[in-house]
Image 1 (cartoon, rainbow, N blue to C red):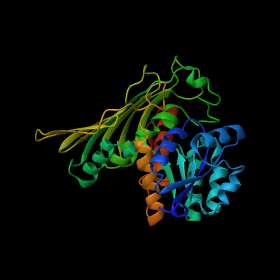
Image 2 (image 1 turned 90 degrees about the horizontal axis):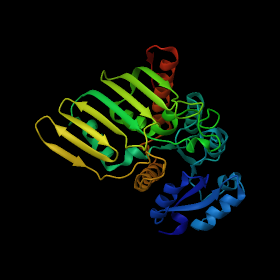
Image 3 (image 1 turned 90 degrees about the vertical axis):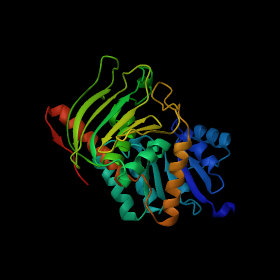
Amino acid sequence: MDAQKKFGIGIVGTGMAVTPHVRALKDLGDTIAVRGVFSRNKANREAFAQEHGFDAVESYEALLGDETIDAILLLTPPNARLELVKAAAKAGKHILMEKPVERTTAVATEIVEICEQAGVISGVIFQFRFREGSLAARELMESGKAGRLASAALVVPWWRSADYYKEPGRGTFAQDGGGVLLTQAIHALDLMLSLTGQAASVQAVAGTSILHEIEVEDFVGAGLQFANGALGSIMATTTAFPGDQEYLLLNCEKASLKLSGAVLSVNWHDGRVETIGKETTTGAGDDRMAFPHDWHRAQIADFVAAVQSGGTPVSTGRTALLAHRLIDAILASSRDGVRVNVAQD
């Protein structure tokens, strides 16, 4: 493909989260071109650009003014998001951003509405949706082959050491906005909700264990009911040394599905057993980037295809709000000691 006809992307942010994105973009180099990279730290952005063969730009405005850039890949921490989105939307750039949308649901909603009002597509990186097992589970649930959902259980037994939380801003409301729910388990929560539908109400306990000196929660246990009447439970923590892969159980009328990391196991009521996907690491332990970039590649390709066709990506800013609202309800339930209704779309 002619280089000028490739889909143009500008990268904002060159921290640890950029690694799987860069690998994915290089895989997609036949159809997507990185037109520029910006980070507030000049030395970092220039070193990053040189390492990967990209062009470093002197300002965010330079990216937005580049007519060959169709979308911004926003990889900043969530506390540095709102003004960047406003400017990108005003410039007519589509936006693919790292999770979470923002630290609070109120501002996250504002960001989504800014994009919608400007007519630009917003996507949020929830790469768990693009695992082979996840895609197969989605087909079974959406097609009705598994039957109606009876119950669900999500377990996220991850580990983050005290050293992880020594990084500037980690474990604070000011930068992260929350703990294990908003920063780690949100990927699994989004995947769960994409398969179960919205949660209706929740009763929960959340807190900080003796293992971490942080402002935010590192353990959550919750019971919930979904809008479709199914029942469920959630356990998420960063206290489970050395960290194990997350798993999701979906118990339906015709089969029970278990998504364990990237692998789907299906136990049909008629005796059939199916296994889909391959075992892989998921970033559950201290090496939080220990996972393949294939899922990022699939999500970026899905986002670009949606922009080019005028369609809707699998994961949007609007769908991301479902996980934000569930997290709010879980924390409110724990704080007040009561069952809390989850805000609906």
